[in-house]
Amino acid sequence: MHRTQIVVLLALAAAVPGATAASYFSLGGKPAAAKPCFVAGNAGYQLSAAANARHIVRIDNDAALPHLRMQLVDDPAAAEFVLVDDNDATLACTGVSTVESIRIDAGAAKPDLVVAVSRAPADYKIYLRSKNFDEQDAAALAAVIWQNAGRTGSLRTVAR
Image 1 (cartoon, rainbow, N blue to C red):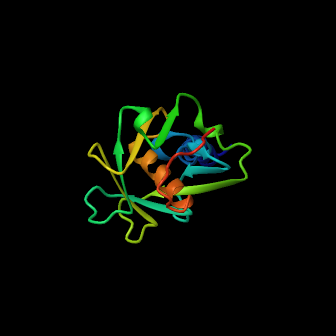
Image 2: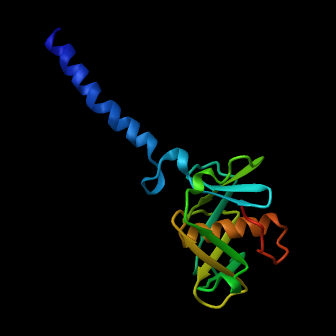
Image 3: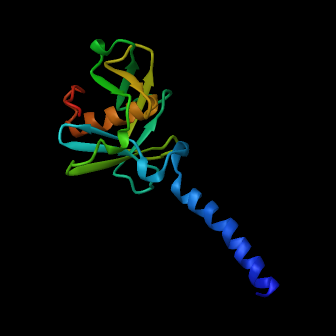
């Protein structure tokens, strides 16, 4: 083999695993195929970094008129929305006919929903204990479920 061919092969051998790893991992270092999924009723909701996500949610605690204000609580019995998982949420949407994508975008100029989430008293209370979702994720999921329920004021859902 010529020296040039050997150098090219070595470069490819070093570049391919790096490119594969970059495409394999997404938000938070989780595998791209393993984005968390949550099921409420017959629908699945999956967080996404895709620009074309079905729902764009901006978490903005300083918004003058958010669509929804949520209070994080420590008691699941006091919450309208409870998100608890201790296992692999990547398989949660298996078998669900509809999976809606949600992108959290702090800089979205025209989001579908603006949500304020804090420990301060609010009309809607959420409880979170999760290995897969953080507080903003839970707030975005609850807000989209609330919106899809027709903004009836209820966040109580049946989750699998």
